[in-house]
Length: 320
Image (tube, rainbow, N blue to C red; front, side, top):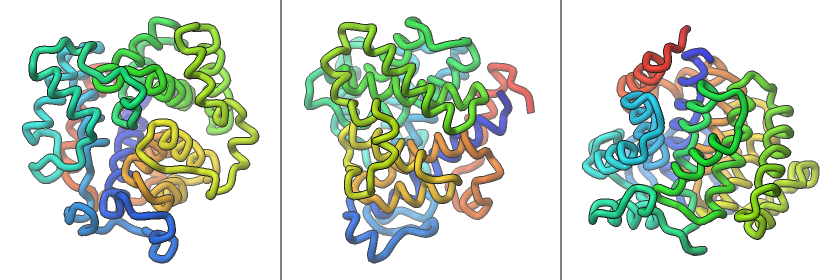
């Protein structure tokens, strides 16, 4: 692994997030009339151009916790999330766009719940709030594991469970991790997707606690049919299955970072999160130099983001 890979994944995520922030909740029809083609400000939250949201804030929290501890420490991750609630890890010094499930989990933790008992466990607790911040975990696992064994998947599920503990959310994080892990280990896009989804399906088929929920992802498991879906078949809401499907579909049906994130944003609805998740994968797949320079320059607080990436790279002795 190289430092540029870390930056490509983190910037890929953050730029996708920032492209989507101004038009979050706009419909697909609205965006088809006036599509996003560049970084812009104003809009839904009236934020400056280049502003990133909770998707990136929480991702940076997890990365910094890994740098601080050198391992996955659930208490420490939650402490970083609480610092974010106090306006650290933000582009402008204020928190905005925090999901209900995440807020409830952090309030439970603040009132004394243990980290792994803070996340919601009901079927209603299946927003995309853990999927959007899971990318540092496959980064860590690619540095410490040769394959995604049961121990690795338990770490993925527990990091999700800090805010979203229902099996449906755990599976989404697991599917993403299998694909990202393949990219980080040097696989090309097609192999990373095919092998990742195949191995994820095998894992969840072999673990009885996921058998019922696994069926919720039947569209993803049938990869050939999934890739052939039309835009009208893809939903891009904040529901975790919709978000995962939309992100993967955008990644699978484009061949560059720019095409991937713009396709994701212009699906509408949860624009920032879908583009962040798709963008993190596209950044990994196509590399640092495929992300256009003007977007990197427009992103807010790049010095801070660079610092988070450098601390992680230094901690794990990652070279140039």
